[in-house]
Length: 427
Image 1 (cartoon, one colour):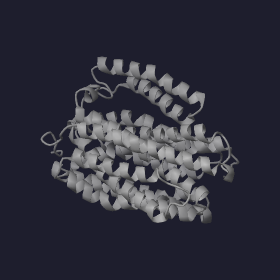
Image 2 (tube, rainbow, N blue to C red):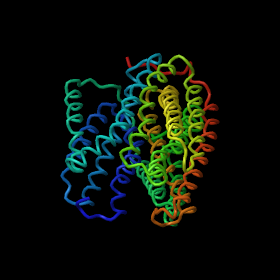
Image 3 (cartoon, rainbow, N blue to C red):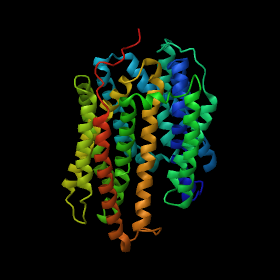
Image 4 (cartoon, helix red, strand yellow):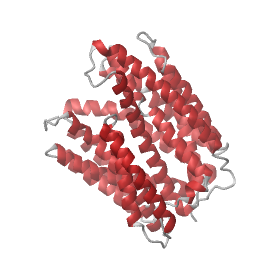
């Protein structure tokens, strides 16, 4: 990078975005429930657009990191309301289909993003990655300006600022600690998040208008177990691309472009199957479909745990196809179950909770991977001398993730039924 930043500072460019997004998801989701979805979504898109422009014209790494934090806050405002808005607009019989199409759009972006980003960076420089997204954001802003209707009614309740601060501090300690694993500092921050979590729960149970009702987790089995299933699923799958990229390049000798094309098999399959899975969850109990998806994901992860120095490429692609199908079956049906399990006045918080569980799961996945690497390989540069240890680490990680995902099937199946309690569209 042109700023000459070290590896640690470069690592904070994506990490700062994830941290900011995770910390603000629940609070802005609550603001959306109080003031209306559009009043949070619209400024969120504006903030994302402005922050993206500023990122493109950053003059130093610390400034770029600061703008990435702003971008993360804006995206939290979008992510916490997008699913809630779809849930409101579409009735229960069509909700899964809408969520499935949303997942498809997401994974088309994930499929094309690295490929297009590589082309842009190679030919036009890293700033072009940010500039390329601005026309899309500008188009969304124009469309929103033409439609001034509010998506939901406002709820006359107060916003819990004190609870939001404690919640943000707790999540900051947890997420930052996960980013530092396996170092001692990482465990210190993770342990430090526990008393803050206890304070947050105690405060939220006492006040009249909390940012999230603890009873949603204690009394609503579908909501709590679906959220846990989300976190477990992402914990078990998010590091897949990272692990496979290391395996394909270091153990098998593929170049980065070939590696990217192979790994693309998973998000492409997810994009293809997600609409059908969403539509199916409108007709069949969504929890059952999501559970089946986790089962298929276990098969894919178990296949990858068998990787060897000469594993056939067809076997690897088959495992990625299984993961793609499994995640397609899980994602939109699970989200459908979460959103259909709560009253309309909690749609913003419910949407934000799913997104937060996803973010924490991502960080857990990478954190577990780093702990395994540290124990098996140590803090050394990856050279041919440690390729055997690298392969062993990858095998252990995938085996552990397969077991974790298998345990997650319990929460997915034990959540209970959603049918008969679904909330309809706004009138």
